[in-house]
Length: 210
Image 1 (cartoon, one colour):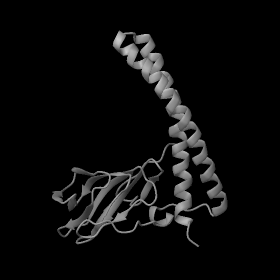
Image 2 (image 1 turned 90 degrees about the horizontal axis):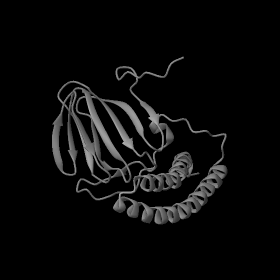
Image 3 (image 1 turned 45 degrees about the vertical axis):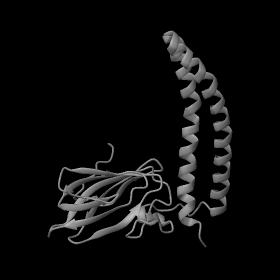
C-alpha cells in the first residue's frame, strides 16, 4: 500500500498534526470569518485554492484568490473573511503546533486569555488509555532529559564553536568540518527530545482540566 494522497475537494480536515506542523484543508462559506487571533510560537501559511478571501495581518489588509499565498508570522494578529458569493477553500499550515495554539485578540489587538482547544478541534482522537498522571510523569521526565542534554550541548557548542572559528579563520577545512559535525551531533538529540516534549505536551494540555 502506498502513502496517503489528500484531495482538497474531499479531505476538508486536518491531515497532519504533529508538534512540528499542523496542516489542513479548510473550506469557509460566503461571509464566514475567522476572528482576530495570533500564535505564540507558530508561523501560519495560507494558500488559496478556490474562491476569494480578505486577510488582515498585523493591521494590513489584502485580498487573495486562487494560487496566492500569504503568511502570518509568530505573534502577528490576523483574521480572515470570505468575499463574494462562492465558498473559499485553502490549504493552511501552522508550524510549530504547540498547545495553546491560538491566542484570541480584541479588535484593538490586545491579547486575551489563551485558548486551549480540545484535541477534537484538530481532528485528533486522544489516547484515553494513557492517564493524565502518566502523561505528567512523561512530561517531567522529558523536561529533565532536555535540561541535561541542553547542559551537555552548551558545553560542546562552546568548545567546538571556538575550534570552528579558529579553523575558518585559518582556512582549515578539515578541522572546520569536524567541529561542525561535533556541534550538530550535540544539537540533534536536543531537538529530538524537544519534539518528544512537544508531543507529550500536546497530549496532556487538552486533558488538563477535570
